[in-house]
Length: 177
Image (tube, rainbow, N blue to C red):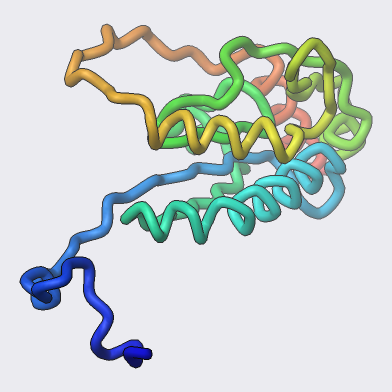
């Protein structure tokens, strides 16, 4: 049996010296709060579990996963990242939820002292307060295995949603008290 140092991708070992550059999958996890908000905490946990499950497959297929966890704690960051609803998971810039649905989030409301809605994840006919692990895995794999044509998407103007405006205004008000 050959040892690991002699294994190669072809019988004539012609590719052994070839440097196979990894392709990148970038996952952005954008959230308002991880200290109190159970929706954000659950989204982070399920994202971590999903990445753990697909990491070996993606590595074997030549992909490297880059994860950016971004705490959207100011209006300026929300605008910079065109943040629509908390929490958000994007794979290569594409939100894994096609439509944004929200419901009252007691945790974020308590943080800012006002009523705030956060994302509800609709998956296979059911609504969830946290994105199901299967939903995240499917979104990652779909992004990897879907061919993308280099089409320019028309840029739609971004405006900070009133819900997030309420959240950040509430935080500012509480900070002054």
